[in-house]
Picture 1 (spheres, rainbow, N blue to C red):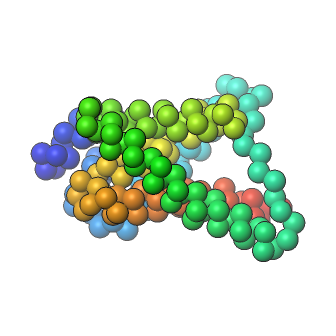
Picture 2 (cartoon, rainbow, N blue to C red):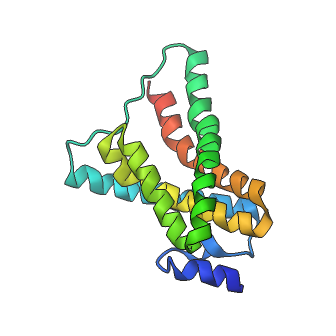
Picture 3 (cartoon, rainbow, N blue to C red):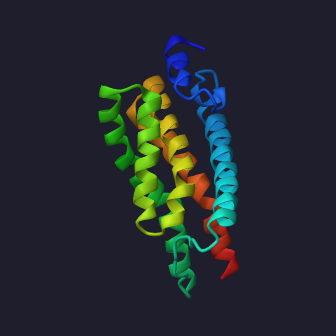
Amino acid sequence: MDQETAGESRYLPLLPAFLFSARMPAAVYVLLAALLAIVGHMVLGAGVALLLPIQAGPEIAMPVGTAERLALFFTLVVFAPVVETLLMSVPLLVLTRFTAPGVAAVASAIGWGVVHSLQAPGWGLVIWWGFLIFSIAFLHWRSRSGYWTGIAVAAAIHALNNAMPSLALLVAS
């Protein structure tokens, strides 16, 4: 682990070391981080459902037509991850001027959890986990390969994370 990577991981020691690793290709990193986000969401979702069974998730009206369904899928899997990653990057860059990257990533995740809770209160208790992973990925890859690589890696993880429930919506309706 290089010095910068060791510095990042020391603030979040319970997370897997690969999140801070400079030794893997971006594609492998994206797949591993997406898997970590998805599994974390499943565990947190199950916990929230057990502890707060009256909490509902976000309500998404499924369109009837095929074109509208594909547009919704595109919105959830491509558009939202790119836009949210771009929006996430600005506060993260500001926060890292005043605090350590790990602290900035946690603050970002909490902020996104609060924003998502405005739509469905229980959702924020689950969604923060993914945004912690996205924030760490953005900061890590930005420091390693530049701003746009950080955006691309974090958005790709977010897109894979959103793909599973979006496919379930597409197939179930």
